[in-house]
Image 1 (tube, rainbow, N blue to C red):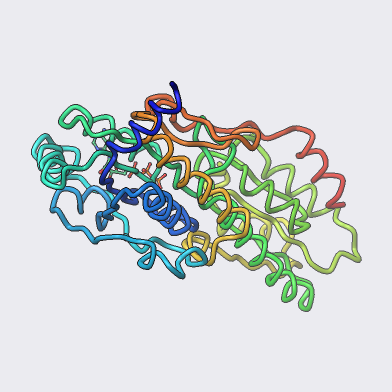
Image 2 (cartoon, protein in one colour):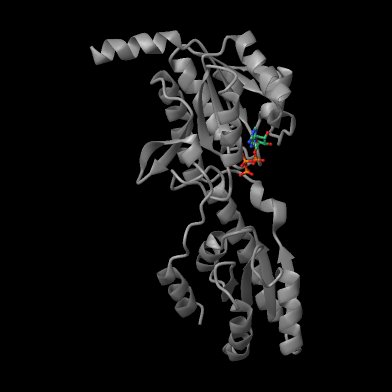
Length: 334
Ligand code: ATP
């Protein structure tokens, strides 16, 4: 009986929309591909809105089919482009978006974005009865309801790759490199990339007065250490990599200290294997969730299983830095 019900429900879903919203992140294309191909498998037509909610407001869209998502799984960015839309925060914008959904007679909508995009989807649901589900597309890995967000694994691998390259030049010249990585509120990226790249120290927002400790550490470093890499999360209280370099120079003028701010390169590049797999799982389950009549939920992966978290609960949270990992970094970097 349940099976017949399931098939019947599948049949009523004829057409869905998909869009990417907020900041771009590597893996969004893999997710779009999974949505389109899963929908096609169930004979559901898909259209993609261009530049996130802006495309929904302006009815700017492209038809998507199995062929149009060929050769995109390995590409960073998003073929649908993305945007932050102030118009979508107005009643007029939301009404126009709802009008577009009605015009296309959409049965479902998949939003790939961060918690802001999900808040927008909640507002949109007040003007349309289309079923909406989301996939977490953000490099910050800071959403409740998933162990991974789309983009995080690639971003962190980009940091490690960059630090590996900086170490070559740091070693050749006996330099200290202060590398600033993303993390306005959290040091998760700094900590993990420091462990993976063998960095000598980190400065993170979660630890207070860590700059004083760093200065002592620099003084105590082994004389035979030829390269010294310090990774600073952009939100650390020290004020950023340039400030840290300046203070080290004040205390240790004999050192040649250089700064690298990784900035937007952390957003780009081909998604890693793990990213492509996770993004595909999420896109696949997004369509299955629509077929199951799920509404206003984010598809996540927790303990390797797909999960569904209501949009209002899929908010930002800062993962605690594991004290054991901090201690391990301390021991391994000596
Ligand atoms: P990232 O993590 O990359 O920043 P995000 O989805 O959190 O991604 P936001 O800029 O916060 O990025 O949100 C994306 C868009 O969602 C906004 O530009 C806006 O169009 C829409 N949005 C966010 N909050 C609301 C809201 N309260 N009402 C209507 N729309 C909203």
